[in-house]
Length: 385
Ligand code: NDP
Ligand code: MG
Image (cartoon, rainbow, N blue to C red; front, side, top):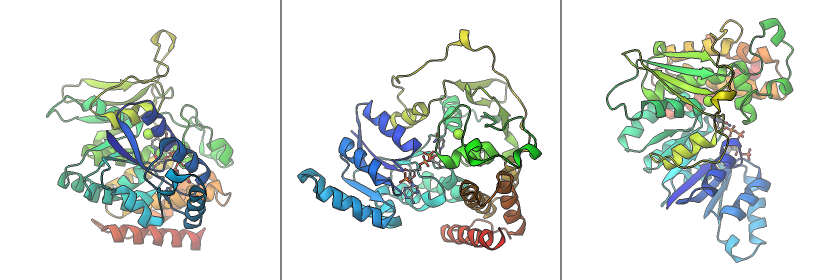
């Protein structure tokens, strides 16, 4: 039995992970963690009976504990944790094999590094953590000999394309992007788009933050950096191509010019299941591609003048060090402000740009440097915008 901990079980990736676990033998839920949604967490507890749960919000954790105590015997033994301590304790639980990192944002850094130190394999969705701390995480993965299995669909696609290639390193990674709901629009048109407009992704149903990131193309920027860390590629060898139908999930070019792609319907359960069952491929219920019904697959160059987030990500990636934290933290806060009506859509990249311009880059930041710089960025934004 593979024992699984899900950090972010009530989110889009978390709930789909639970569906995958339900439909597969040999996978068991050891622990679940969420931010504050105890209503859904309680339902998940009733269905999957984890030994341990964590609710980041301590008030909600107490509430959940009370509700569990009021139920019959078995529920009283569930260990309820809270806060960052609780999250990291879940991540390093004895007897757990795989930690699914599916929280949103760089809040995942500590739990993920603790999980690796405890020898857990990581099914990795939480890209913000890898973007900011890749220089710490990747050497740890080697040192503690754990597997870092990508869940992000593009990175899972690349991982699938390079499987079986032995020592043939890819010459180039071609990350595909849908282009988001505003593809084809110009800057002036973007000035007045609302959160409701941005939350309508054409092909994927995901959490709010990543959906806004897809609309600004910051998501693709984060993914470029994620690919840089995961596959040890130079930025100049990672190319972004718009493929609006989201059929090709990404491609790899080898030095002889051969290109290998992974295709499929847009369903996150495939990369999740592949990461949880790796290296085995198992049956997955759902639609299959019907090539007779696909009229065309088209490609475009990304419009980096309009969607500045992608170019800023390449800049942050080239600078490396703490600039990656600034890029990510500024985006996290700016997206939040956009969703709460405190910033406009084009304000998101404006805020990121300004934060990057004023930052004095530090090479090789430690974990505590990263967390400190994150707070500095939040304070700067608070004082300026
Ligand atoms: P959601 O917003 O849907 O879910 C986020 C999850 O994290 C929720 O369970 C939330 O709990 C939990 N959470 C938030 N803050 C904390 C905290 N402080 N402590 C513990 N748990 C917390 O996000 P997604 O599932 O869409 O995305 C998760 C990650 O996966 C992101 O990094 C995203 O970029 C990445 N990803 C997502 C894809 C997708 O299809 N959704 C595709 C590829 C990558 P609560 O519900 O209680 O707030
Ligand atoms: Mg993706």
